Image (cartoon, rainbow, N blue to C red; front, side):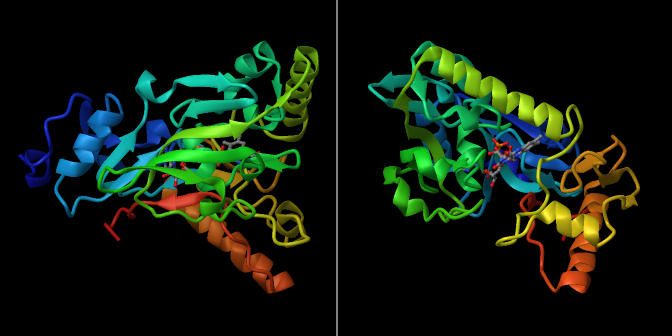
Length: 303
Ligand SMILES: Cc1cc2nc3c(=O)[nH]c(=O)nc-3n(C[C@H](O)[C@H](O)[C@H](O)COP(=O)(O)OP(=O)(O)OC[C@H]3O[C@@H](n4cnc5c(N)ncnc54)[C@H](O)[C@@H]3O)c2cc1C
């Protein structure tokens, strides 16, 4: 038995060993998690963090919609807040409290049913509420930072903290909080609105995506952040990289800032394609595109 596995605490949740991560990521690539841990609830997660081997790294996986997991996988524990105990929500006046494991799309039913507007943008972003914090997810002119009041967080040693939004130091597709913090619950500010109005906004946002963005493909959304005052897709197109392809990965013909895996690509091919685009844009415009997709884990050589 692997030494790390032998020293894992007895939890009420589940462990999966050598669990392939490609099935948990939208890009559908990536090697295994040494250990995947699915906590039963907050107390179980706390017990795990307090009793796991001290040198064991832990990474939280949301819905894998903004991740490029490298081919060698992730060392240590990959924590997934999949249990329904991490997906609870409640409304208090114009505020909604959502568990971090809840999918954003569930808000499509909740918001109109409770006449809570202002959060419609979130419904169309793939992924979980917890994942939206890390990248300050946003679209249609609004970002998570515009609506987050505070978050309940567990730090790397199992302490629970209530953190006000300003402590996340949000910027465009960026937040700053310690890598070992696990978001447990978000408190979001909504606004009173008519049900029909909320439903209409959600519908319009969905329709915009259907007509402007590729659907039903293995992607992670925008590959690169828009540099200040510029659009990444335009830079990619004008640098002659819109149709570039390496192995099973290419830029989408519908939106050339979206990567598309035909089902045969490896993580290293995807990363190589991204780096090629960065180099071409740098050469043409002297602008360095920054990855919006988060790259994690080790390559197939273990680096
Ligand atoms: C088709 C498509 C369209 C997209 N459109 C948009 C868009 O319009 N706007 C936008 O901003 N993004 C967009 N994205 C990217 C992605 O959906 C968002 O970044 C999303 O918020 C990621 O959430 P996730 O749960 O999938 O997180 P993951 O991809 O699993 O993880 C992302 C990061 O969040 C961290 N994380 C996840 N959960 C927690 C937690 N509970 N505590 C601490 N850290 C956590 C992970 O460790 C990782 O660092 C799109 C992606 C796709 C595939």
